[in-house]
Length: 63
Image (cartoon, rainbow, N blue to C red; front, side, top):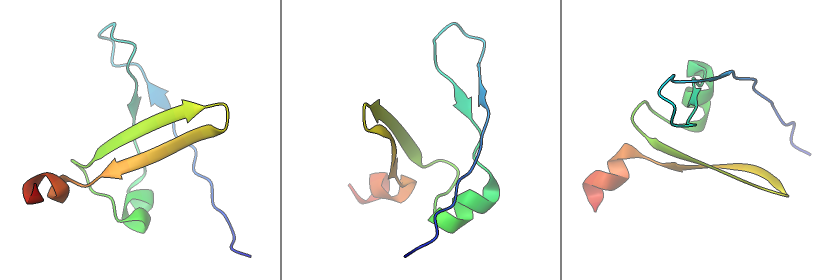
């Protein structure tokens, strides 16, 4: 059975009244997952939990 990891981040209010949040992901996590600054991250939540979906920046260049 694989060992799972967890990461804790702090959500920051951008202060623009939008209701959005800024989530700064640790560089070690980005590297481990193969993510890069500029990739689009979609966060979806439901009764099952929260999922993260990534659209790499390179995907835009290919389409």
